[in-house]
Structures are given as structure tokens and as C-alpha cells.
Length: 435
Image (cartoon, rainbow, N blue to C red; front, side, top):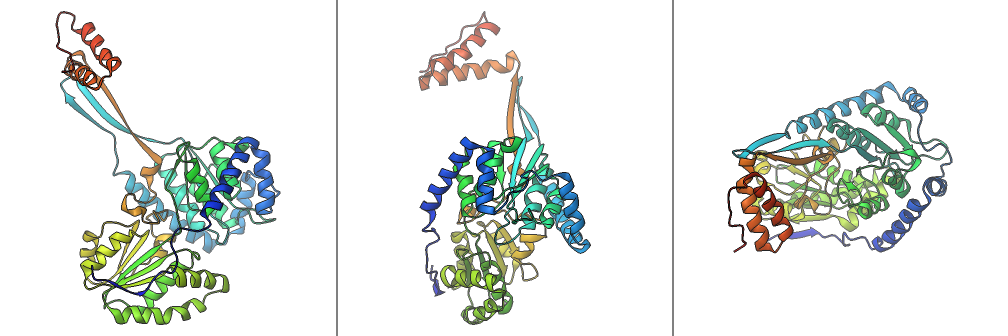
């Protein structure tokens, strides 16, 4: 592949702080599991400067609802409706089924929602209203019986009113004023009288991601999450200003959020590199610093010879977000195969998917799109199987099971088949040896 870089990332995507984070989170989880509510309250005071109630009351959500402007409510309702309808459409793609494999042997599958889910809603650097909608709405559509949501409280205030309104609208059963590892632990361990969750979902910082990673197996998680990342494919038809802003908009997430531009048109790449510093400088100071660090350290601009090379490069990177701003969008839709969510054409943008358009924004990062997709109703449901048989249907299966079991050396397995043949076909003899 003959590609070259106009700009190359300066740092590895592997965070040098990760080992320290792992040790810290291991220690905190052990303390929380042992000390329970008391430790969670202490950490809330120390880390979030929160000394108020942990469980948000119905009265508090009602006060929050009154504090939210009508325009904000309308916007949140708009996003919720889009996300709900997309999740409902996803749910129609999975169903129960039943098949008669042999005469007298029937098997099937059922779709069963998990019982309890914990949704984490980030609220540190930014208040992620959209994450509240994405996680809780999707779990609700899946049919989850109990949804707990947690979000970091603001000192002296609690969870912002807009997030509380969104959580109530989307169907959260319990909301807790806890962030970070203590919030994850409260849901995972069933602190404060909460049901222990079967699955944790939602984005978070490195400590939240590490807590979910450590707890995986004990409970389910939506996915292992790293820093958010985005890749744009652009040809000579692309608008350099839109491309540049789309890169800056995603770099705003944080210092370690990679953004990549892959193009066949070198003048476009050069122009984007030239104008991005000015766009970053126009942002509010904190946002500009995040974007500046991400652009300086993690961004790449890659020149390819043709569109097939661009597609192959995108598949290799397997980005969380993949935005095509190039001709022949149908070709790209059919060709590309490794991404969390795909955005086709300049009329859409990653921010639409992040906030309000419908498909979920909880997506695989750090190349995980090679083997998994994003959060959906499927994640909150279990596909389980069942089977039943008549004596006639059981007969050939029992014979094969006994023989295969003995070939494997598993005599106990073989005899469970033998005994059924003896019971239901006492007058027949069978060769059940493993040779």
C-alpha cells in the first residue's frame, strides 16, 4: 500500500498512566466491596465534594424538570424520540425461533432481557446529556426490568437538572449522585439497597473504563472503552473547512483522542493542516486546549493513491467513528467493513450521531470495531436456546452422544445417553462403543 503521511501521530495510543490507573482502581474496588455504603459516601465527599443524598428522590427530579427550559426539554425529547425509534427498529431484527431438527427433536431460541442494568453518565469535563439518553433509552426498549443510572454530582448541586430530566424521561428507575469508580461499584455491588446489576453500560473516563474492565466476568459490560477516535475519508470533492471542523470537533473530547484524515487529494490535506490551528484557537479555552493536544499528539493526515487504498486504510484503523466525504457514497457503504458507526456525506457529521440522530453513540474504540459493534438493544438481551425430544427423536441423538462421548473419554456423559436408551428401548441392543 503506497500511502504516506503529511502528519504523523507523536504518541502511542497506549496511555503511559495506565498501570497507575489499574492499581488505583483495583484498590478502590476492593475498599468499596468490603466497606460498602460508608466507603462510597467517603469517596463522594473526597472526589466529588458531595455530601448530599446518594439516591435522587422523585421530588428532586420534579424540581429539576421545572428548572429545565422548554426549549431544552424539546431538544431532549427530540433526541430521545429518534434514539428510541431506532432502538425499536433494531429490536425487530431479533426474534424467537423454533425448528424440528429431527422428527421428535425440537430446539429453539428465546430473547430474554437482562434483569438489571447500570448506566453510567459522564459529568466531569462535560455534562453528557446524550449519554443518558443513549444508554437508558436503549435498555428500556430492550425490556430491562430495572435501570439504575449514576452520574457525578456537582458540588452543592448534585446531578445537573438537564441530565436528571433526561434520565427520568428515558425511564431510569433509580438515579444516584455518584461518579467515578464509586458510582460503578455502587451499581455492581448493589450498594445503598440497589439491585446488583447484570450489566454496566455507558462511557466514562479512564478510571470508569478500568473499573468496568476489572469487573467484567463478575458482571457484563457493554465494551472495553478507550479514548474516542474518528477517521474522515475525503476526496477532491470534499469541503476543506467542513473536514477541518469535523476533525476539531472530535479532538475536543480530550488530549488522547485520535483524529485521522485519509485522502487522495494532497492539496486538501495540506489546506486542512493549515486551517485547523485557527479553528482550535477560536474555541473556548478549555475546549481549545483539549483539541490542541489531541491534534498535536494524536492526529494523522494520510495520503493514498486511490479510493481502494483509502478504504483499506480505514479498515486497518477500524475507527470508532468513520465519516466519508467523498463521491459515490453507495460504493463506500458496501466496501467499508470495520467501524463503530458510519457517516455518509457532508450533510451528516459525527456530532449528529453523538447527540440526536438515532443510532447509539456508545461505540467500540481503539480498533475494537474489527470485531464488535456499538451499544444496541442486542447488548441488553440474551439469546438463549432450548430443546425437547420424544423417545423417537431422542434415539439417534443418544446413540451418537454415547459414541462420541466414549471417543472423547467421557464415560459419565456416555452413560447419561445409555440409560435413556435402556429405559425407552429395553428390547433393543445398540453398539455404543467409541471405536
